[in-house]
Length: 95
Image 1 (cartoon, rainbow, N blue to C red):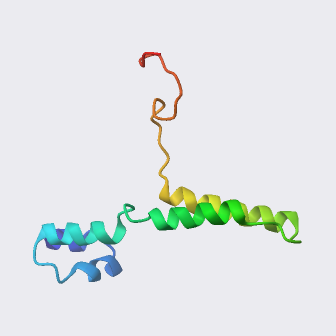
Image 2 (cartoon, rainbow, N blue to C red):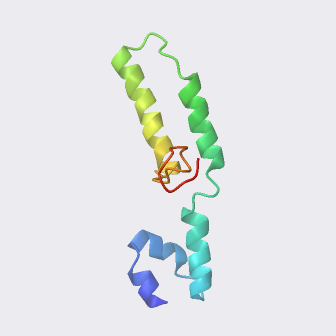
């Protein structure tokens, strides 16, 4: 298990140093860093994205705010290259 601790950053390893087994360590890391529980964060970001108004801000500041929200949202939605999933027809997929 020491290889696992030594292959992570110090602040990450300090969070799992009390785990007794590799399974406990992996489970703890998954609970801490998995995006499975980020539904609330994604919802809040979408809400902010669609409700943020210009309210007298300069257009550059307003667009920068929108862009920052979009970029943060991308952290929770990994980019996929699955063309079928995106609805893009391809040669090997029946139409």
